[in-house]
Length: 147
Image (cartoon, rainbow, N blue to C red; front, side, top):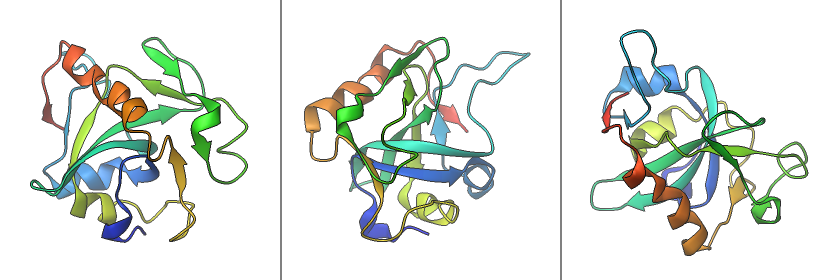
C-alpha cells in the first residue's frame, strides 16, 4: 500500500477501482451511454499526471498493455521500474481521466506491485510531458461525473 507522501506526478500505481467507487469521491470523464460505461473496472494501472494539494486529490490516467481506439503509446524512455513495466509497450487513454481523493488512492493501492522507495514511474519530474497527458481532459467532450 502506498504512503500518502508517495503520491506525486509521474507515479504509476495499481488501484482497485471497485474500492475507489465504494469509497466515493472519485470522478471520471470516461464516456457513458445507456448501454455502456467505458470507465475502467477491477484492478487497473494508472499514471498520476497532476496533484492538487489544496483539494488533497490527484488526476490520473489509466494505462493499458495494448493499444485500443483512442489510446496512444507512452514513451518507453520515460518509464522507470521493474522488468514487465519497462521494456514493453504501454498505452494511455486520451479520453479517460480520473480525479481521485489522495486518501482513496492510498486505500485502493494494496495491490500495487512496488515497494516504498521503489515504485514504477512515468516521466517523473517532466512537468511538460505530464501536463500534455493531463491536457487531454480539456479536450474530452464528456464531463466529469462520479465514477
